Each structure stands twice: as C-alpha cells, then as structure tokens.
Length: 155
Image 1 (cartoon, rainbow, N blue to C red):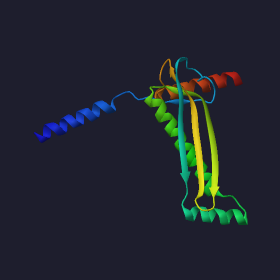
Image 2 (image 1 turned 90 degrees about the horizontal axis):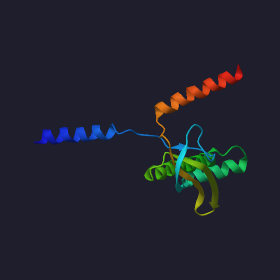
Image 3 (image 1 turned 30 degrees about the vertical axis):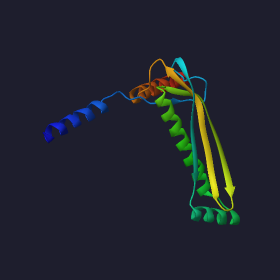
Image 4 (image 1 turned 135 degrees about the horizontal axis):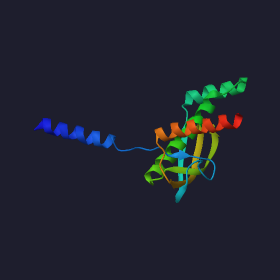
C-alpha cells in the first residue's frame, strides 16, 4: 500500500514540474520590445524594508567617521531593492501577467540613533498580458536575432 502512495506522489510531482513555466519580463519602458501587449492587468508593487544588525551599523558609522566607502549601506540598499523586485514579480505572477511595464524603483534610507539604519524600497509598475509568454528558449533565440540585427547595422 505504501509503495503505491509513493509512486502516486512521484507522478504528481513529475506532472507539476512538467508544467510549462514562463518568466515575467520587466521593462522601464511603456512596452516590451518584440512583444505585443494584449491587456493591462493593473498596478503591481513589491515593498521591502531591511535593516542590518547593531554591529554592522556601528562599524559603518565608524567607517563613515574616518572616511571611505561604506559598503554595508550599499549592500543594504541593493538587497532591499532586489527583494522588492522579487515581490513585484511574485505579485505579477499571481495576477497571471507575462510582463510588467513602466517599472519604477524608489529607495529611501532612514537613520535613527537608537534603532539604527533602515532601507525602504518599493518597485511598482503595470502588469500586462503579452501575445506570448517568454520562456528561456525564447529569450536565447531573441537575443541571437538582436545580435544579428546589430551586426547587420554595423556592416
């Protein structure tokens, strides 16, 4: 009995992984090159608030006092922006979008002597349905065609 249950579970997993996956395309433009927008699905956003530990903050304050690049805060802003973009993509996928156009990022850092430094990031844009979703195979073939067009213009 247990063996049949394990086989069924494996078949279900195999079926779920064979489902065709697609990538959500992001563009800061109002369109995506080579794709036709079929329908707008509305505004999507991803938000992230991140902070470093007390010791990272203390070290960064000392580094800023003596001069030099404060990489801890740069990493903090980068990590916060990346997380906001991931959440934007997740929200777009929940709505069934193939892409997000007019993507914008806003970042802010707040410093409080008692609480430390916080990085706030928001990524937002308009979720859209495209004429065809983008797969990894499509991206490599479109990249090759763009390179071919570029080479033809040079010649």
